[in-house]
Structure formats: C-alpha cells, structure tokens
Amino acid sequence: MPMNRAHRKLCSSEEWARTTKDRILPWALEHVELGADVLEIGPGYGANLRVLVERVDHLTATEIDADTARLLRSRWGDRAEILHADGAELPLGEGSFDTVVCFTMLHHVPTAAHQDRIFAEAFRVLRPGGTFAGSDSQPSLRFRLLHFRDTMNTLDPATLPARLERTGFADVTVDLHPETGGLRFRARRA
Image: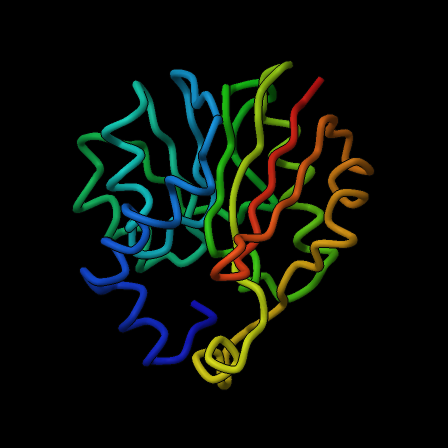
C-alpha cells in the first residue's frame, strides 16, 4: 500500500472512520442516488465501506492491496463482496453497477494515466445513466507532511472535468469544499 506508517495509522483509526461518516461522505454524496448495486474502488481500511454497506442493497469493493483486501473480507465479507483487484483492471462485467464511488484514494494512484484507466473502468462497469462519484484531498502543508515518502498525486480540479469527459462521461461537475478545500466530483454514463 503506498502509504507511510503514520498515514496507515490515521486511515485505520476510529477517528478517521468518524470523519468519513460525519463529514466526507455526506458532502461527497450529497444529492447522489446510489441505487441498489454500488462499487467502491479503493476502500482502504474500510471507513467508507462500513457506511455504504448500511445504505445499499449490494456493495462490491475492489482493493489493490492483498493484505488489506483480506482484512476487509474478514470484517465485511458477509455484507459486501470484497475483491483483490486494481481499479484500473476490474474483474467485473460491463454495465454491472448503478453507481461507482471512490473516496480519498485517487491521490495514491501514482500517475495521471493510471487514474485515467480507473476512470475508464468506472465508466465501463456503470449501467447507462449510472453515476461515478467521489472525493479526494487537495494539497496543503498538513497534507504534504502526512504524505512524506508516500505516493501523492492529487487531482487538478481545473483539468478533472475534461479528463472525465474524454473517458465518455457526461454531466461532469467538480466542486471544492468551502472550508476544507477538498474536491468532490460527479459524472454520469449517458
């Protein structure tokens, strides 16, 4: 997993789980109809997954790190399908999901090209009319310190809409949180 020890400790903490539940997901998913079948790409230690599993009929999550996928499977495998897979090469059928989501993970993807492959896979597995939604952090001094010797490839809010549109998405919106500066996006498969 491309995170240093301090970052892993934070992301696996109950404090982070509360932040996710109380602040990140409500803002990232505001006005998003999740539907019955949802895919989360890159759940990490499961802070988002534990909220989503309560909100949808069928949740699938793909985690690139094998050890973390096993951990998630042991905790949530009775309520969600957990797959060890790269979000850029999903072992899932075309048009399988109403919604695809990812939260605070795209900055851990080492290159823009790899991020674009994740966008393409999200598009491929969405049903027509489905939504791709998520959020991520933006650079700050604190954020940079947390990512010391980490992978940190943040999304540029100015170029993200065009990247998603090139993938085939329509109705793309990108917003910055007025207080935290975090980024959220939404896009639809027409």
